[in-house]
Length: 568
Image 1 (cartoon, one colour):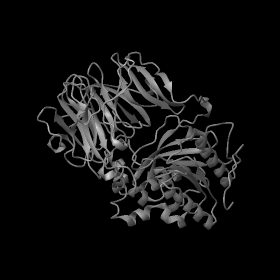
Image 2 (cartoon, helix red, strand yellow):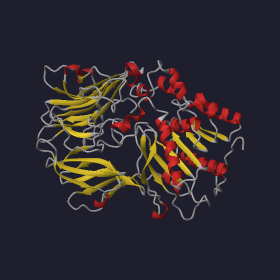
Image 3 (cartoon, one colour):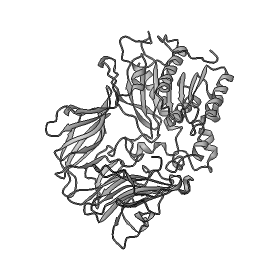
Image 4 (cartoon, helix red, strand yellow):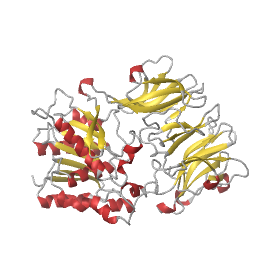
């Protein structure tokens, strides 16, 4: 990792690894999303060239690397270039064609991409504009995750042209599995190497999607023209966990995947298509074990909001031995996920169960702009980040109060990073919540727009507006510019070494809250950057937030850590 070089290691040889890419100054080459072409003895990969490290000058390309090379520049050949971004290089079964996804600023991969194919012969040019355009010609469609059928050689891909991420076969105008659900995974586009479907040895397609808050596995015959036939569907009733993805299949139709449930931490599972019994847990991300009677099982809710309806997962309090209320309705903690073009899930989350086991209800909101609910819902945040998301977290809290599931006087909210931006926006621009906690939350959008990596360097163009042309709008949406409107107790948890959200933002808010006479506390964590990584600090942050709400709401917290709250 220190050099970013690709290495070759011959298994069982006892030899030291050999570098097959150049020893470049400042690790200027980075490689990802690789495919090994055994016949041609080469790796086909996405390469980032950081010779000029300024985000706008970083060059992305698809290249081939000689697997038997000695680390010279001559061992690398550029196969596709000319656009800002590349992903998913996929070689056809006969090794003659390469499919890939490409797009340009200011788009993100969930906005607009193209699927192109190049024939790999001596006459092939590297410029993407010369390669066959298979899908994405309208300039308003997101194409993701191409894959060649291993026996027919047909090219498949996922497109959102009908309003949902559905699976298509190259040359067809209709989806092979037309559904009003999204395929492609929970947060497609954020990572390289994502693949939400594949093929069995017998040629059938298998894919995963989410329905009513739970994952489903589909199998279908896609050998002919038109829609798929002989569709089979499996879920938790067939032994699969509540949530799963990243599925791969063995030659004997055994499926391996990552999954979990509200009571099961993220794990690697094996499931047999033939026996259809309980999925076998092969490895688990945690050694923690909890009794079922203290694990809160969420239910998906849909509630009214400014643009129609929004979604979330409601976790009721769940611990007969621990109650923090004598009232009919419990205090509610609303959570805003990061991204923001992402979504929450229902696999075991200690950061949620911590609260429900202590008498709090939790609402984990998939606000407008979240993935998994179709293109229209995902696009609600276009030009509206800091408005739609804020409206939705507030609407979710109000809905639960109306349903008698939350106490209107004890509504609190927290979030980190992008979720922290939503949290601070809800506290600065609305009066629904009576307390909140920002974990390294984005308070200044102008700073975020001017200092980030290439992939997200134009992200805010779509979420807010073109910067610096619309700087006034950025300032209007930035909570740090509206400190005077903050009107409830706020806990600020901040890493000292954070470069994305510098500590001075939290310090400014803390001083303003103190000046207004509002209860507030700022905790700075040494050695932490943007997102806490040290176990002791993660634990302290949770304990501090619980102690903070305990004092604000008058809830006795046994063995609470000592927290000093200003103006209280």
